[in-house]
Image (cartoon, rainbow, N blue to C red; front, top):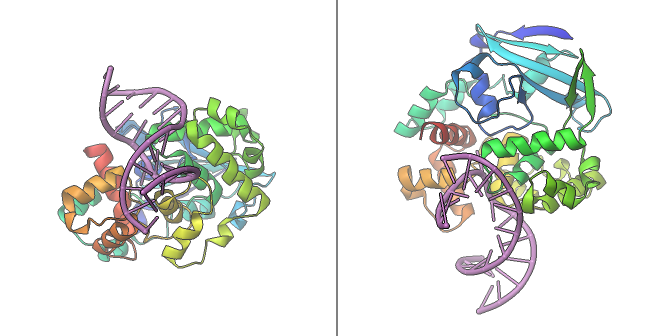
Length: 307
DNA sequence: AGCCAGGCAAGTG
DNA sequence: CACTTGCATGGC
């Protein structure tokens, strides 16, 4: 393994690795200590996390036969890594380390809730995940808790993901679209996916055959992109917003889940409308537009962990 | 025991 | 278009 480190204390706004990886944006990292993404425990502050990427991922396609293992931990102002390749550019991409957080929050209002959330999780960054794992994760997310979504992705990787052996340990990549398209619905149900099983299988098939891919969405204006995402099965407005925000770089996307809807009722009642599109548009404006998804991500994590 | 969790698809009016 | 219903599953 190669090793390296990134001086994240010097980045504008810093980095909170644990909050970034465990706030329900990404489900493709695991902790060495085996703990699930749920706890707000202080020990996670220096835990090792690992993931497996397709080998040509920095060139952007998921599903290569080659894979790279990347391990990271945050300690003493550094993001330390061990990996089978140079992980610097991958981490900058995945964790959006080039985002200037103070500049982003210049564009976001400083209401009491947002101020508290920012203060609680300084350095939390919106992730930029690979498209397919993000799509599958959020199809699975319907009516599920964060820890269980994470568990489902772990099960999918164990069952259908390519094995990668490094330094005597076995890692599992996230399954390719082809492998999930070939899975049976009943097998997926055995892994706990419930009624989401046929959605995952069918959407994987759409990607595998090329009928619908990220390329059909990326580049569209935000609201058109949200509509286009719904060509996938198991993707409505909310899941579409999550994939746009966490994989396709639409930082203005504001997913309206049950937590955010509660936040609207409690803190932004003037944003209540009678449709997803209208409420989303109002809250997007309330959160300053361009980076509204950043504000949403802080509020979601804050409400879910600090009540 | 009931309620809830980062909702969605299909059917009806 | 809006509204209703059915759908898995585990934790509190």
